[in-house]
Amino acid sequence: MSAQINPDDALYVDMFIAKNAQTMNFIRSSYSAVLGLAAGTLGLTNLSGFIFYLLGSTFLSVLIFALKTKGQAGLYFRKSLDVFTEGVSGGLFSYILFWTLLYGIIHVYD
Amino acid sequence: MSRQAMLLDPAIRDWVLIPIMIVMVLVGVVRHQVTVLLNGTPKKADLKSARETKALQRCGLLRAHGVHIPEQAFHGRKAFLSEAFEKGTYLKEPNAGNKPRGNVMQDPAYVETMMDGMKKNMMNIIPQTVIMGWINFFFSGFVLVRLPFPLTVRFKGMLQRGVETHDMDVSWVSSLSWYFLNLFGLQSVFTLILGSGHAADAMRDMQAMSTMGMGNAAGPNLSATGQPQDMHKIFLAEKENLDLTEHEWGLENVETRLLVKYGKKPASVLLDQKKDKIARLAGRQGSGASSPAAVAAPSAAAAAASRKKGRRQV
Image (cartoon, each protein chain N blue to C red):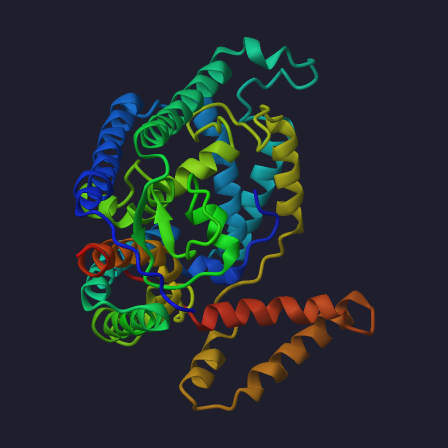
């Protein structure tokens, strides 16, 4: 029971916001796993691997921003910037796991 | 930092590294299915308790969207809800107000929710313990793989659990640490296999361990500490909130706002109008100076109304 109700909140339907965030998380986590596989296969190490992840997820964000939200991310998220930040840190674990796995299989054992 | 050369037997990869990962994926899938099975169909709330929560929601809606209905209608609803809250019309047990509450453990609904929470927590903790025991028993002290990035010595305890070698490079990963890496990283695999909103989530385990036995929405109303709440007190608090809510008609000077929005009039017109209105109000009340609160409130409402757009799904 919140004591104060922000008038801006009334403009967004919570259910849709949650659904959009869920969709973003789904896309991000799948994508970061694939990105990790790519990084491991390429044999990226150290900083280059993390830069690869950042570049890759920025690319994905730009795609979603341009194609899915048609440049009006504010219609789908509370802040337009959420398109670029939502789920990035959550995908990092998956990325590291698959990166390590493929890197290990290909470049450590042989 | 020079890379240590260390040869790992390919058999370790085939019989330890990959099996651990596969087992964890499969256990996650099984756990998801068992959780779905245990939960069954969500319990329906009975009529009285549903009415209790809906009354609160109704009041919240009125407070949030009251600007969209005429002033008269707003005041009618406000008076009605205030009275209902005051008298406790919507309470589950209207007369239970001053009676001392019995022991919560004797309330069957409460015990049932507790048991549900316990069952779910057990489902989360048991598989993880079993896998950890399995890895500890068979693969304790194995070096499985190397991280593709260097880490500081601080991570040694985390990544090389079970391998007590001082001079080994920190980026080598032991079997137990590979388990933890999987625990957090397999999230995306589960999302792919089971769809989003699955029950195989490791992050939720951590939450489940920290908050044991939370009630769900259908059960009796529990506060964060797990104690049933006194609904009448909540109603009274809500009534107080409602009393403080002022009605600001959402369509007031809408024509000017429209013209300002499309650039036909300068934005300063709105400010002037606001000042006029405040001055009028102040004059009517007989007090000269306008309080800062009175200036802030209408501007927020106007800003919200001018940015009214449809919100859609992706």
